[in-house]
Length: 323
Ligand SMILES: Nc1ncnc2c1ncn2[C@@H]1O[C@H](COP(=O)(O)OP(=O)(O)OP(=O)(O)O)[C@@H](O)[C@H]1O
Ligand SMILES: [Mg+2]
Image (cartoon, rainbow, N blue to C red):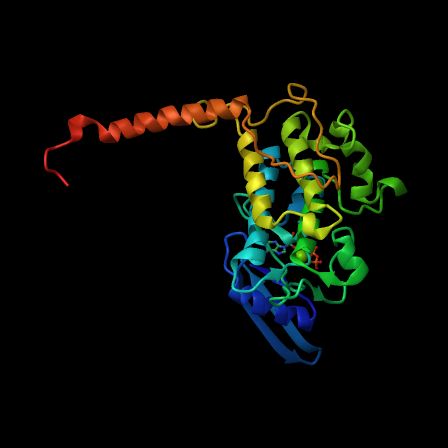
């Protein structure tokens, strides 16, 4: 179990929302209590225990073993599923408003679950394009239009998701005060590297060493750039993000994984020099597209499926008149 201490409004919010949401990528509320004592109201929330703590702990706190590239992609996809559920799959829409690495918790198998619904806000009622609200959240993650106008939409979460994707790529915090001034804001720092395909690999988390696919990293950066488009309407929906991440994961998986287990990732330098889409390019380009490895994988799958179905439909197993 894990405990949380926060203000009354956030506490009520969290109990209300966590009481109704139900998804494998959202943390479960095990219990809550509020008691009056000499110090005032003491409020407590009890969540399911997430044995690998938060993504922040693994990605940004030194001393832990680095997350593999594939695990990063899978964590991103699970977290995207959690947001897609909140935005698109319930009777009402929920905007999370505080999407960041410390609110992505990891279970024993590194499956991600979003926690901290204290700032979550119901989406706009039918016919309205946004909710007007005071700006809350965490510096470095909040969408620019929300910070400037207080107009909140689900697309603000999509922006924050883009920031987290760059944290996964670089292993750096959204804002890092201990770095030189020009490197403190992650999005400002990555910009020149993202627009130059030769420089792109320089921003990739050094803790990955050579164990990642450059092509896959390009694709993830392209997706991040789509999420970080200035015009919120041009950002993808989270269900689209889930799908694009699925394509990136499929292209990253080694074809031999099921039959001949080999190294999990490809080595940088063996791949195309094409760079990611530019930040805020507004271009729409799917992240899928079969490469040779994927086609080989699909072919193997097909053969193995055929063999399996031939086995099941083998004429020798047919008995006349059987059901
Ligand atoms: N259910 C849980 N299981 C295991 N560890 C947890 C759980 N919830 C939180 N933690 C740990 O506690 C840390 C702090 O979480 P907490 O939500 O209190 O603060 P935060 O996310 O850093 O900031 P904020 O108050 O803005 O959400 C997390 O990074 C994680 O390591
Ligand atoms: Mg938190």
